[in-house]
Amino acid sequence: MSEYIVAVTGGVASGKSEVTRRFETLGVVVADADVAAREVVAIGSEGLSEVVAAFGAGVLAADGSLDRAAMRARVFADAGERRRLEAIVHPRVRARVGTLCRQAGGDYAMAAIPLLAEGGGREVYPWLSRILVVDVPVQVQHARLVRRDGVDATLAEAMIASQATRAERLAIADDVIVNDGPLEGLSKQVAALDRQYRALAAGGVAAGSDSR
Image 1: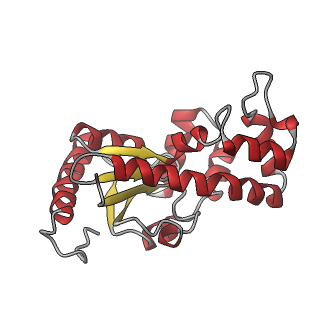
Image 2 (image 1 turned 90 degrees about the horizontal axis):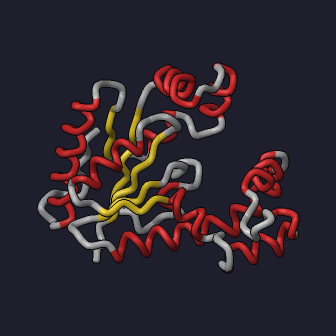
């Protein structure tokens, strides 16, 4: 059972997946909120039943699963609809991620929550022990999106603008990984934080310690 839980968050194309993969190689269990979001509306789930009750059977694909493209188009066109969907999905995601983290073995567990700053931070995740932000300059995010996803510059700008600002993410951070350089440097940062989190989980380092 892991009672010490570290959240990992960051903007689009910041390299969150690279960071969590490196923690996993060190034996840390990572519960992914994006994966949980799919699980809580899987076929046969209470979440999917509630979505259908709220939005109608038109949000289902032919196989009975949630038609994510149709749902996405609907909620992005109407903020009220988006909030209604979030009210169904988000509490289930938080509960699922929390359960997976607490059930994990090891000194501590991690919760990968991409939209933590946008979703209310510690106010809605009060069980988080610490928040790690993967940070990159906006121009690096932009370049990665264009190169990695093949989107044009305008769409890349829109994707970045739709999320919390860099300053808003850093405001909730206890620790920061700057991921704008070679991957070797990323591994060193992860290793150092892993040592810190194991010590914190064991009570060996003051809780107020900050790696920013």
